[in-house]
Length: 220
Image 1 (spheres, one colour):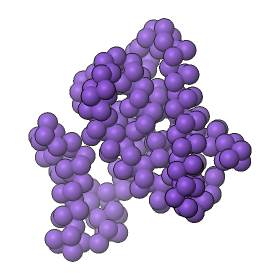
Image 2 (image 1 turned 90 degrees about the vertical axis):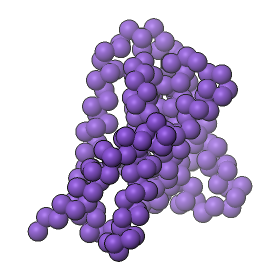
Image 3 (image 1 turned 60 degrees about the horizontal axis):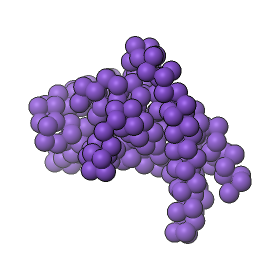
């Protein structure tokens, strides 16, 4: 029998959290609240996720829907294509290499390193990459979420602190580093150009990581 508990709690909590998004990002406040509710009322995760998993299923279509702003800003993408594509290629290669080197320096097991490599790729793609290169999909999913939250919360602040003002540069950085969650922060700020570039970044970084991760791992 279908138990709507998780679905209802997640929906209500998130819309309530939106009222405080100026102070605390809605995704973080909602997450903390749900954890507290499950802990206080001693509800196990399986019971909660039996209906809340609907949102996980919708993550794929939601990512595809981000293609809409791309179609609305083709001129901007075409005009800046060289800088955008080179920047995304550089970001992907550096992310893979630095993750591998850092893991080796810290004597991390190779399967854990492989789980961390797709951390900046949106969840559905990251999990598949992790399976392909010998990672642990569950660990990858957790790291992807944490990376996305970190990017969504701090991305704009860090870029502002170092003096980055270009919407194209901001969108490129946030999309490449923190996938859909980072992109959602651009949407919340109602920055159309940032959202467009960030969407393109998360898509291309996902494709590039899928192609380059196995190749670079063999070379490293």
